[in-house]
Length: 359
Image (spheres, rainbow, N blue to C red):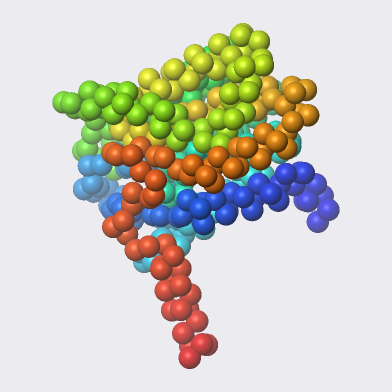
């Protein structure tokens, strides 16, 4: 037990876990995606190789494939499965922030947690975990097969996020690590996309993929116009409280590091401006920037001396300003309204299970 505790926990572990649960469940509020029933219907369609849905969420098969393997046939059970798996992945995210030490809480205060809270049913929570593991692998120079395997999983899980993260990582990394990423990450990305194409062909998917959909008439112009008119809100939706640390590091660090951060940020903005789900994509695309900045902050004497004041400012901004999120329009509350409210669903399930006892 002591060994497991030492392996999993670190000084900020418990506050990171509690803060992530509080922010996601109470402050941001958990919501399922509106089309989660359509994703549930894939569990029956995939084994028969007769996928009728033409939406590009079919390209991200995590929950549906696990539903096929576990033979989930009840929608309520599927909703509970998605929630519990998302909660487990959130726990693993907190565990794997250990390498950031006492600076790890800054990651919890950034925008990815809103994305994972408001869009439960998408595979974003796994993308976040994989990006952290990739960053950790590149930072600590661990085994090359792990780097290849992690990037293969990321490209299969969400090929578009895999592409933009590759570009952002290449900008931020030093030359030796950049070469290593190109040698093992790029082939994994290519193979992952090939495997995904084979999977879509195997299940007879006839819809348009993410990349093809972007080139529909008017999509790029509408997206660019939307991002251009709401740039500050897009920035806040991706970084949120972490913006405080990002600003400090940009000011007090050498231009060499700041230039990398700004260049990577421009790439993330550019990619977001041609994407479909504005803040959702941006909050995932900037995760390598957030992790890179935290790694710089760990070695900064000014940040270390003033860490509690920076944390206090960052947490205060999150609670005072709250979420500003772009998803078709500027939002400060979850956009998903068609599926049963999560906070009604859980009591209904509990009451159903306990009806024989409580009666």
